Length: 99
Image 1: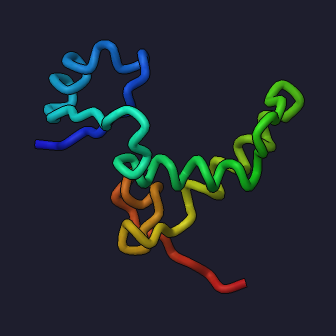
Image 2: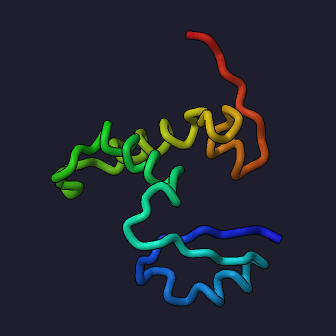
């Protein structure tokens, strides 16, 4: 069985159904406890390197956004044994080529 750690947003109002469909236990972090959502907070910080607060996403092209998504999904994460999110999601190993 999987464990799912969710933020407290309204987008998870149907968390019972999500947990049931995924066969996962669902847990929520405490309000104002960002340390309970470490990988989420780290990813937010990585996103801010590309898109500072106040960025108007309507001025960005789909290609610009997809480029950042690709970079972040293929970036090894120390907390995940240096595996990438893509690798963890697909189960396929990344092959790093020195440039």
